[in-house]
Image 1 (cartoon, rainbow over the protein chains, first blue to last red):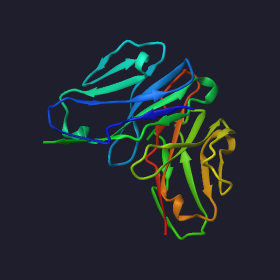
Image 2 (cartoon, rainbow over the protein chains, first blue to last red):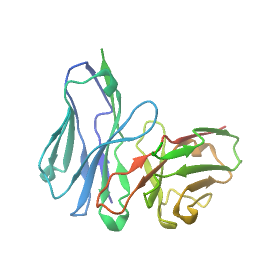
Image 3 (cartoon, each protein chain N blue to C red):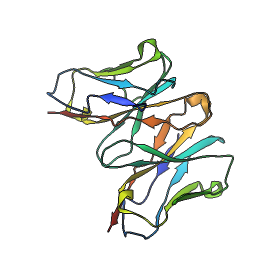
Length: 116
Length: 115
C-alpha cells in the first residue's frame, strides 16, 4: 500500500525566509509520480509541481525548488524568499502509474504561515 | 471559466437526510475523481471514472454512497441517510489520460455539515 508522511504539521516563518517542507513516501511500485499541491484558505487544491520516479534531477521553478531522493524515498519542497501569499496548507502526494488511474495518495499536509 | 466546478459550495443537512453533490470537470478531461477531506487531514480517494465507467471505489465508499457520471460528462455524488461522520469537504478533480502522470485539477469542493 502507498503511504505519504509529512512530519511537519505547521511551520511559521517571517517573510523572505526560505521554507523547506519534508515528505517521505512508501510504495511497492517501481514507477510512480510525486506531486506537491497547495491549499489556500479558499479550499481549492492548486497543483505546484510533479516529478516521476525515473527522473531524480532536482529543479527550480521560480521560487519553488524540490529535492527528490529515491534512495531515501524523500521528496522535499522549498519555497525561497517566502511571501505572505504563500501562507497555505501544502500537501505532498503520490500516484501509481497508469493502471491505477493515477489516483493520489496524500500526506497529512503542512500548514505554512508566513508573517509580514 | 474552464476549471473544475462543484455545486453547492456548502451544504448543511440534518442527520438521516440524503444529499447530492455535482461536479463539472474540465471539458476535455476524461478522468474524474472524488476525494473526501476531513478537518486537518489530507484528501482521501473515494472513487474515479474514466469517461462514464466507474473503475475503482475505495473501501471508504460505504453502500450509502453512490457516484455516477452519465455520458462521461458531469458527475454526481449522493450520500443517503447522512451521518455526522460524513461531515467533510468533498473534492472533485479531473485529468486527462493522454499524458502519463498528468496532474489532476481540483474544484473548490463542497463542504458538508451534518447536524
